[in-house]
Image (cartoon, rainbow, N blue to C red; front, side, top):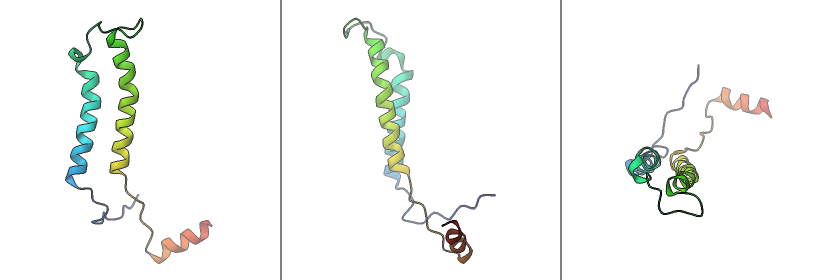
Amino acid sequence: MVRHSPVTKSQAKRPAVKIAVAVMLAVAVLGALWVPIYAHSLPKLGAFPFFYWYQLILVPVTAILCWICYLLLRTKPTTPTTPTARHREGVRR
């Protein structure tokens, strides 16, 4: 069974960060699911109609948004404070 350390006040994320993450993820998902945005053949980029290059551009944009959300939500690992955990860390070395 995994024991999780309690979340300290410094690790708790502010509501503004969570809202920003939710908005970025919603933009990424809705940009692909809301078809009327990109259901056009014009403008063309070379021989590609708009709906093809929109979807091709949306993939790296979504990946970048997900990466930014990860960076905003990640927490630093806590250091073990119990004597047995310190002993185990010393044994691993």
